[in-house]
Image (cartoon, rainbow, N blue to C red; front, top):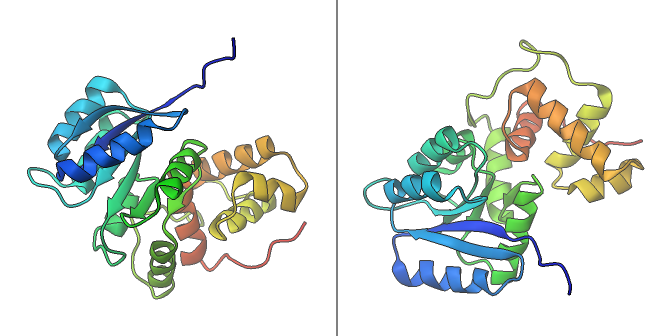
Length: 227
């Protein structure tokens, strides 16, 4: 018999029951994705994340009782292994920076196609950032304009400096490349890329690739990366 596909266990959170249940049903049709619970507000999401220990939470932003941003902060504190992807109706969402600061690995518009959502969930589980293109453009644009993104540590003042290869890899992360694409571009293995990203995040005291990309842009460290 063929081996069963290892499933990504998901908690779906949204105060609109029809939307939440529709998303859950679509996700459950994927062989490698499974919705193990639902919540209708942030407070319930925190409780269920502690109880169910999902791999990933798909989190609405605007909800009663407790919004998705505060719920993300609490979940990342209480169940740090859980990844969070935010869903929003508008690319102009004022909570974008705050959610990233609290550790959200993705920030997506609700009008994306189901296949895009599935692919981005899988990308997050590979420790890649997941941002809708318009949101990514807004994020980087506001960073360039000097909008504070988060209380990101200044690596030039604190902690060890990045190696040239770590900086090269983070520049490509900021360009939106996946680990596989970076490996091909730099002629190194995907595992080596993962190690460089992991080491760089630790040195910079950042939580995920989205924060790393923001750091590169904020510091003006971008630019063409060669071998």
